[in-house]
Amino acid sequence: MLASPGDQEGGDDAFSADWPGRRATLAEEPMRGLRKLIRTAHKGGLNSQSVYSRWSNGMGAVYSGVEAFVSVKIAEQIHQDLYDSQRLFVTLEYPTRAIIANAEIKFRGKKPRRLDDNGRIDVVVWDKYNYPIALIEVKRHLRWGSLKEDADRISLLLKRYGTQNGGSLVAGLIVVPFVTWQNASREKIHDHEASMADIEAEASRLGFSREKEIYEEIAEEDPFKRSQDENGELGYIHHMYGCMCLTLLPEDC
Image 1 (cartoon, rainbow, N blue to C red):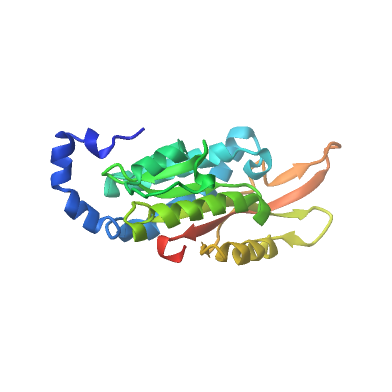
Image 2 (cartoon, rainbow, N blue to C red):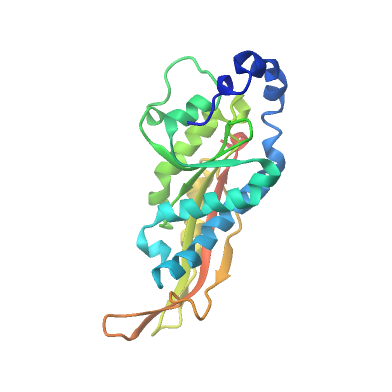
């Protein structure tokens, strides 16, 4: 677990002396770089695909069930791009209960049952004060049924521990890499727009907004560009790596 306020140098008294100012700016300070954080996480999800293809000699990340690899590349991108400028830290597979304990908000009564479990969040972004500020879940299927459970959990966490209630969370993201593809014997290119529109419609009910998708053309030398069937014949052509990102802000919950 990251250091709690009482573990900071100087102990509880030293931290509490600065607490009123910290609480006053908690909702504002992370917002200055929030858009950059979202773009960076989005980019990490996209870039993970070409990297995995190189590592695996053409195995597609979205076909291989390697959400953990995508999470690592998102965390790496955030660390590379934002640590020096914003002192943001990242953790992987962090327990939901520990996130709640560090979000620094105390509620009377019982937590919603869906938060009182042993779940984990794929990527958690922490600020320089050791507060969790962003939750990122990674999925590989462009179907609302695959995203709904994580979307519900992020929504509950943002509602209860977001900055609008004096907590530290400023955003929740769901990142979904995908590829556009074409059967080699047909002209139609599957761009998944209909699926993403359906997801957007359902996610908006919880307050999520859809970021503009980002794309990378699959290079001719990328072994994932063309796939062969069991007879060695060309089966599918993959055109673009893409990445969808849904964003939830506390005020939209």
